[in-house]
Image 1 (cartoon, rainbow, N blue to C red):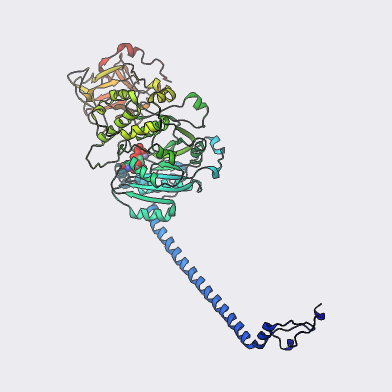
Image 2: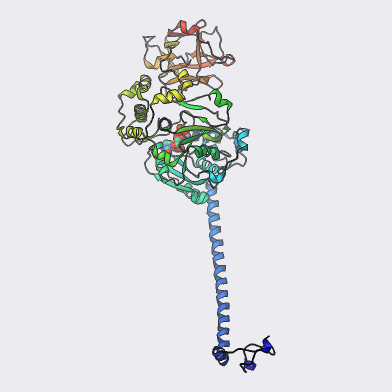
Length: 619
Ligand code: UDP
Ligand code: MN
């Protein structure tokens, strides 16, 4: 084809390019121009080639420099991580406490002293915690059917975990955060919001370490003056971006698969608040122990109590079941729903009754609380004798603040049943509840139901155990030693939380409050809000808030032998024994001949005592 083209140009001999023989070059004016200036063009091309090479070499150099820079910064970061890790994790003993087993060792005398000091300061064995890996493994305690459940992760909402803390030990806080990061599907955990509620010592090194270890997953905020749990939580919730808030204490360990089952019920009803089963982390050896599923409640003194599941709920285990009152520490709730409910009542301070307020609000104003047995979280319960200290700028005592909280919640949510509470806690009636207008307005706005609805729908078992009208008590007044008749049981030494013997009040039936004991219809020995309880295999007698759960607070009186006896089951009973030499008390194997084990009660209802063991399980 080409060969047939006419020769329109005769300059191809001088062409820049070799032209195959017989080819025809169609040259227009531009082509001719190029051919005329071929030297200049060659030069231009040469310059372009050199330019490209120089540019290429330059970019190569830049890249090398950047690589070098990255290597330097990475190694600096690694160095920093190592340095900070050494501060917080260098004492970790590999394998200690792994799988949630009790962390034990042959500690020296010096180490044992350090343990005792740390327990006094924090309410748990902080010395040991430092030696347990923040990433320790935990045994999977879930019901076997929970392990088979699958959840569509892409359909579940993501969460903001809100954790407030006051003077929490670094190692404990680290373990909380590490467990969260490693046992939560990353696509569901949008952020961890940490609110330091006025810790007295700010640990900058820890803050730096958290920044490096958890990068931008952790948002940290500090309130300079301690405001208490509820306010601090609301501050955290206001920072949250995810659709669901998960409130956690700063001393927990979440377990495998903890989050998905908590979120699942919210997909069906977004006014659902969910709670996990709370397992126990032992304050002494960090053993991880199984907690029981339960229905939470409050008793008529506003103490949190746990009741067993209803029969049909127990049969349906591990399906989620209704939880009338949440424990308060750990729960998940839709962010919008939480704020629609007004968060926590802003008039509640420090702590006390906040979980009752939120739970009642949830149920009465159109929501629900479900306990989800497939979700388990371990909580480090402190030694019962330890309490976090609160500093109140108006120098109100903690007791006064808690009483005010109780009164607020009772006034707003209990309707006429508040009188039942006031009968048990008469001091509440003389305490001001503050302004309740906002709470009453919220109740109206959300068309919340009366408390009677709660009793009718959620409290059948509760009313059976904690009736509105108390059945009479078995006995009351002094508990007088028969071997040392001048001495009576006295609870006034509450600092040590041990009862003692002191000279008897002149009035044996209506003695001073410290010697006034009641063998209640719940078969506990109560004085004020304290109950006698046995510990250490039933051999030590202590005083503790009445928990209403029988167990170590179960007592009976044998009018024939005059023994005061601890324990419900017939094979685990012991007798209260006077120790007149020290004015102390112990609990020993019962011996009807031992007069130190004999007691006279101020008043005893003989008729009722005859039926004491009716319908009580003893084997
Ligand atoms: N907390 C707080 N501010 C306070 C007291 C407590 O932020 O003034 C935190 C505390 O560090 C913990 C949570 O609130 O993370 C619950 O408190 P605590 O564990 O003492 O309550 P408990 O579990 O004993 O009921
Ligand atoms: Mn706690």
